[in-house]
Length: 104
Image 1: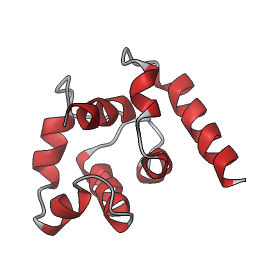
Image 2 (image 1 turned 135 degrees about the vertical axis):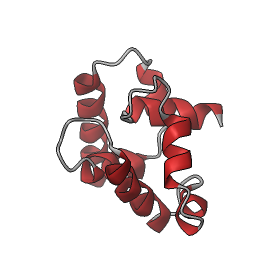
Image 3 (image 1 turned 45 degrees about the horizontal axis):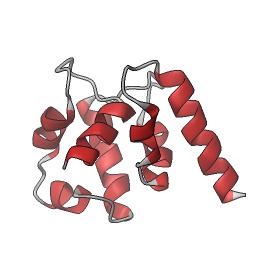
Image 4 (image 1 turned 60 degrees about the horizontal axis):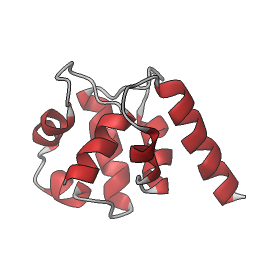
């Protein structure tokens, strides 16, 4: 059942994103991250503000995903947010996070 839920969340994220990033980038995402993103996206706009990113990082840190524990421990949320915001529009998409993780 959990696998089905993760696959569904992944499929929905890809369909709704409308971004120019390749869907293959999302396939490399940790399945838990795919669940954390909509949980952190408080206004359901499919983008994370800095405040929503803090929620995302804290959820990721609980599951020890990527560098999230380090970001949380040193309160480097803004630094991480700025580095991941590829198009510098002040909002993070799931695709930007995925692309950043593939490159780092």
